[in-house]
Length: 264
Image: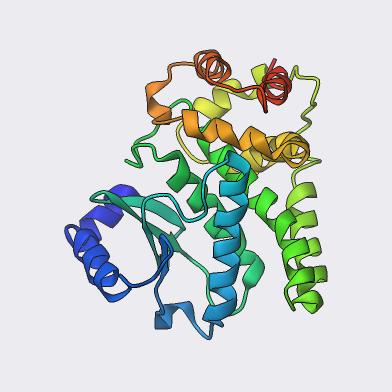
């Protein structure tokens, strides 16, 4: 998909970033949401509030100031959501529109997690690409859960049941397809499938659901994304976990250990 996007847009990615960064340079936030007809009949005030909520949730979890990352531009796309590099910045492409606010949060949370991990974003396949994709799926679950309280406390009380239903579907839709256990023992069964080229979104979701309670119980566990870097640089899951545990602080080292055992 990255190759097709680069072929389609080429150097226009950099031009797109420059154009909008100049237009919105007076904004205080690192997130620039474009107002584009392809986003449909969207309440941009609500959408901005929700994507800013995602930044606040993630920055609070990893212990960094709000809106402190490199800048990213949010634009529409007809294909699939993605996060790509544009010089020193990122462009987040979202395939949503209108006031489908759960879908906005679901897609943006995933791509913003890629933004925070800040790997190569090359689109090249890797044996461990599934791990980053799973963590980003988990970001969507985590932020949708946070969205329930946000809507309840910010004048969107009527939307709370929709958020609950949307999240509940994501937490249950793959339970019967993939039999995973927090006690481990399942990873060997799926290891080769995960390495095989091609996205397995259902499996990523099932693994994310397995890890979800750990992150809800201890949001500091999100600090692990600061140490993933380029997922393509790791040769095995054990190597990656060894690195993550070496760099973990006491606020989440125990939770990280529990997470690792899930893959035992």
